[in-house]
Image (tube, rainbow, N blue to C red):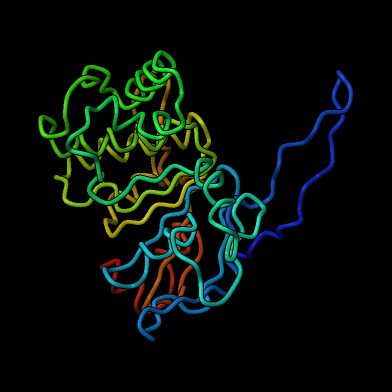
Length: 286
């Protein structure tokens, strides 16, 4: 896929009520020739891609190819050695930490294994950022309940993570990522270590956020089944569950990226992925 120009943004559109601002169609994330190395060992080399509004990008690849590092670069948790990273239209590669913090509040991140605080209740885990911002308790409670209802775990409000199953902990982690109504979601292997049935439940939540709120996202995974479900299903609000798309139809806003030894070797649709001639990609899909 070609990278959308960062400057594309119509000024306004006419409506029956007068002139109104048009939706921002600029990419939410833009990487341009990004490289990073640890101890002189290259981890990412000359990586360029973008994430458009409403787009879900699935980052595939085996362990150790730089997928999690890429997510941390998006969130400003790591700085590139070379290249440009734009988040919400702002260059963050060299942005001071004090300016990065409010940028991160616009992004929700689901870490590997959930990364919940065992000593805190579900309420305090999900509302952790609101607590640190000294939001009033009543508002925290209301927003935590809303986030937990989204992941269908409102009855866990007062529980501790140790009393939850692995899948429930992962759903609580998603609720925590949603608490600020983020403009971008980052999922780092959200189904890693889970059984197939529980994994499908988590992917259904990812799909629900994609289809109900149109939140752009970047999801790291090595599970092809999860990726294909996202492409071939949609979330039906009336039924409250995901349903398959018609035979041969795939979600046009769910696309793929693939890394090999730190280099981006694929950027395209499911159809293009399944028909690529790239040997590494084909072996990964088998």
